[in-house]
Image 1 (cartoon, rainbow, N blue to C red):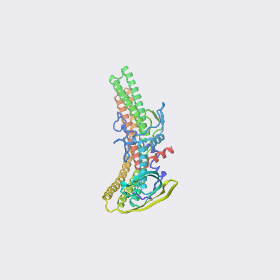
Image 2: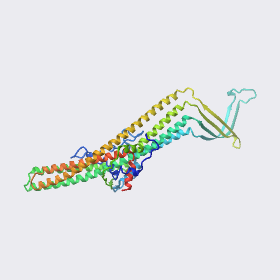
Image 3: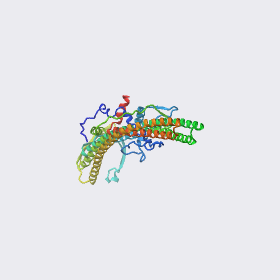
Image 4: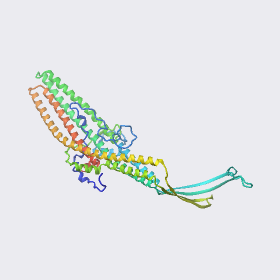
Amino acid sequence: MKAASSQKPGMHELLPILPIATLATLLVVCSATAASQTSNYPDAPSPSQSIPQMSGPSSISAGQNPFTGSVPQGTVGPESMPLSFLQAINLGLRNNLGLLLQSNATLTARAQKWKELNDLLPNLSAQISANVAQDNLAARGLRFPGFPAVVGPYGFFDARVYLKQSVLDFSVLERVKAASAQEQAAQYGYKDARDLVVLATGNAYLQALAGAARVETTAAQVETAQALYGKAQDQQRAGVIPAIDALRAQVELQNRQQQAIVARNNYSKQKLVLGRIIGVPGGQDISLTDKAPYEPLTSIGLPDALQRAYLMRSDYMAAAAQLRGAEHSHRAAKASYFPSASLTADYGDLGITPGQSHGTFTAGANLKIPIFQGKNHADVLEAEAGLRNRRQELDNLRAQIEYEVRVALLDLSAAAEQVAVAKSSVDLANQTLVQARDRFSAGVVDNLEVVQAQEALATANESYISSLYAHNLAKVELAHAMGFAEEGVKQYLKGK
């Protein structure tokens, strides 16, 4: 782990890593639905895809990712709600379930620290009592001639303040330090959860933008297929082409219509997914007001990327804080063998009535010396196991960060080349379709060549979307691996 004195790079140093494409860097899942098929659009992916799981215990159902849920706010309005990317991010940071649960975990860690402090801070309490009593002295063995057998009833009044203070207890001191480290780890976990909310929201928003783009694309393909079918019908009626050409054009038109239906359905589901993540009430229609730009990412060297990741990853800093907490817990368990000292005292007024009372007090010093307690040995062994777990988890996380950065850089380099090739393929497919239509209109070929050109264009468009997805996925993975997703996105939006 890097030394504590290492300086974090400022945002002005990080911006070259995520240029204007920081918003585009989140265009990670928007085209994933078309990655495996070219002529048919698959169903909308599950909202939990590409969203990391939150670490730590949770009361939600097993297997459910809390970052795909939210606590809905507001009421359903009759009009479609315009929603920008920044508005979606802000709603997610306010309503997302994963962030709310992590905020509660931070509160729980703070409460645990105060529990440990309770044994270190002064414990002061007050009590006022009015008592009436009657006692049978004979039953207590006080049987003497002339001695009353029964005393009372009699009353007395007591107002008293009690104090208990630990003077020296190494075990308590170490437990307080451990609880403080765990609270710090929870705070880092909250920061990491904010980054995950930004990724989840950006994923869903840009996935919906891609769905809208697919709706437009399939609608345009339907129009093209409709025009070609109409032309084929006219030529068939004129006796220029055989019936098979018109039938082939009709089949192609219906295929495009089917794809348009699937695209519209996926787009509606993608907006529902976005609403669930950011807390939009069910039934509220939303309209996306932003567009996702695309821009290549400025290259960054592996050493710089790793250094910044180790300095800025909130989950890494949380794991380091948990390791420090485990170390203090281990020392606390060992310190249970040491003697401890404390003070107890009370002061108050005691009398028959408040007006007939006199001050009284007691004070004492206590020294506790453990001699043989098997539980202490068990606590030490348990703390040792916890310490080893935290140390191994931190080492694993450091290796995992390096893996994520390396993979993102490799994918980024490969995907950038794929985007260029796919874009060229789209241009070539468009030219091929124009020429095929001209040849068909001139009667040089039948419309089989046109249908094949349409299919090739659809395939090229899907390949371009898939390569764009891979490129932006690598960028968002790099942003998350380096630990500044939220800051990078908001910095981009401010300079928009």
